[in-house]
Every structure is written in C-alpha cells, then in structure tokens.
Amino acid sequence: MERQFNTRSAQNRDITSKVEAALKEYFKTDKIHDLGQPTIAYLANKCHVSAGYLSDLLKKETGKTAKDHINEFLVEKAKDLLIGSDDSISGVAYTLGFNYPHYFSRMFKSKTGLTPQEYRDN
Image 1 (spheres, helix red, strand yellow):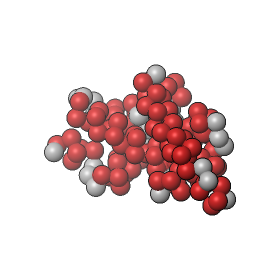
Image 2 (cartoon, one colour):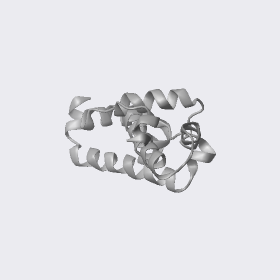
Image 3 (cartoon, one colour):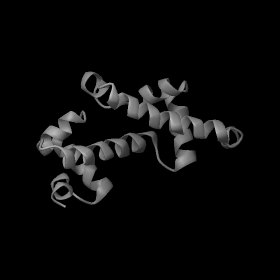
Image 4 (cartoon, rainbow, N blue to C red):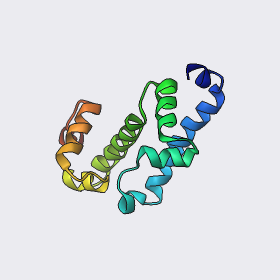
C-alpha cells in the first residue's frame, strides 16, 4: 500500500485539493442545512475514490485524517461565524450541523485552545 501512495504523489495532491474544494462547495451550496455535516463518504465520492482510500491517502499526504480535515474546516467556518455574527454559540453550532452544542464547544476548544465564547471575546 505504501508504494501505491508513493507512485501517485501528484495525483494524491490533486485529491487533497479536491477535498478542500468539495468542502468549500458543500458550504457554498448550503448542503450543510439539507444534509448535515459533510461526511468522509461524501468527500470520497466527490474525489471518485473509496472512503478508506481517501482516509489513508490524506493521512499519508498531510498527516491528518479525513475527519480532521472536516473538523478543521468546520472550525474555520465557526471562527467566521463567531466573529461575523451575533448568533449564540448554540446557533453557530446548529448552523454548522452539530446536534449538540457542547460537542461543538469541546471540538472547537480542542482545535483552538479557546472556547467559542473566549474566541469571540478576543
């Protein structure tokens, strides 16, 4: 499997770019409201690979799992919403497809070192 990734380095970077583009498109087209948070399967489908292959490839290329990519994208969106709106923390969480605001807050703090409220207040 290692060789499989090494011989496709340029193609792998292309898939990494496709993942980022698919995440941006997901939010632009408001799929978050219809389908909830993007899934690994959704991203894999957009890249025309299996979910397992996508996860392995992203881990090899970037050191981050597919779920890490999704969560980091959600955190960046959350930062924009926390600074650019007056929505409550729960409102931001629901906007980003979280069913439980406390899970959003915990994930946000694990990625940024700050709670959503601390981030907003800074």
